[in-house]
Image (cartoon, rainbow, N blue to C red; front, side, top):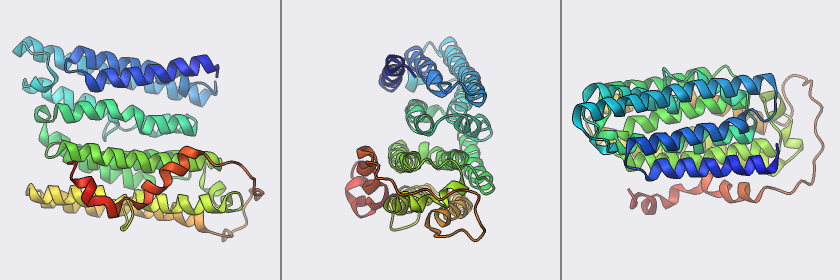
Length: 346
């Protein structure tokens, strides 16, 4: 891809995100979301592979539909109440439409079908952007408008996302699809707590971003696109492979790793809000996700596969490690002891 075109796309992504998260008027928030959508399309389709073009078209259609719903919900709210402010969405049909539109933007169940397919058609770095940076603007809108959201609908979608994110990830062999379903399951946890503690939603998202970035960058460094390649990656970068194993366990939410902190806090907050059944169901459903993370971990730590592999073992290379990856690996694994300091920000 042309460096100038890539620079324009990345600057537009930054601009669109900044406009959305700093606006208090629905039209400005919508403008930022549209800039974001148009900026990521060249990055998805840059390989010119039919699968990449298909992914770009799917992404465009879904995001355009979601943006149209956001615009429609804010317009009928302004028509009914005279308010364009993001925090003043009070007309019930508009609230229902907004909850649906943001769920489409984020990829919550039942509007999740586009997300694994788009990630599978993108490169690992573009998939990282789609899983993290592209989720920030709609998530900020979700937290800003949380009093206006439809609680039964949002909680139902949160539980369904946690269930389906774990269930669908069990049978996958492509790492990008596994991480897509992992993202859907994590979004379920974020959506469940948005109504009660928006700051905790953002904290969960920030920690998820750090852990997912580490995972994607490690996979990109070792060029791992499927589980069979992961089985022989230990010959290429043994230390990075071990760090990847710990990051995957952290994403699963196992103590004493970083990923345990947001799940622990969300369960605690749901219990305080007398939503113990919801907390119990989500905790049990996270065991599904734990299974496929353990499967990935097994693939990273295995020395010789139980069956002969068709892949040639790759010789160790003296590739210089990505400095950003080195910076992200420590917080991906070891932030739990700092939880008292982190919790003072909530």
